[in-house]
Image (cartoon, rainbow, N blue to C red; front, side):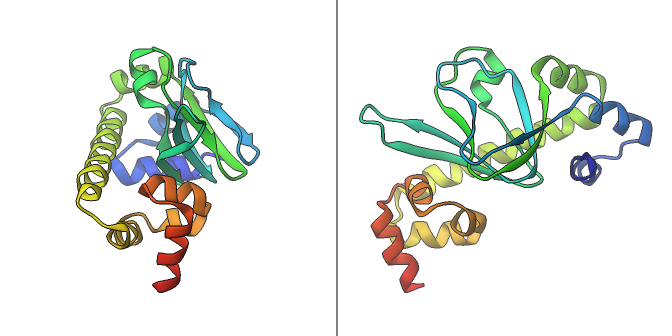
Length: 189
């Protein structure tokens, strides 16, 4: 159950076997069903998730109930409602598995304890934060000047799993397009 997490961590920093075992002992396993909500809107986020198998989506809803996907995470990556996890205030978003998923999760307390005790783990956290920031900035600023076709080409180049594994409706909301526009563009490519 911890193989993918251990492999991920070893690819980012050099951990002695005993340290790796101590870190992974702080994680618990969770198997979810498709579309299971991990964090409800207006609830405080208490866990950080590592995806062994499956996909997690972070999304918001507007006043009329329309969902807006903000982030997708797949196997071998971490996901959480980060602002709520950090400041322990109610989440302004939902965290959901969109496929049957096998997750490992760690409590906030244990997570921050590991970042304090193990520089390699703190380095991984910093890298996750930096990568998340870069992807979000590229998506936000890049999309501002993109037409629909350019958005789809960008996602194919930078996040191809979104179009391969996520429903058209969710992918369209991530791209800021209607599902019919996304379908039409995909048929041209």
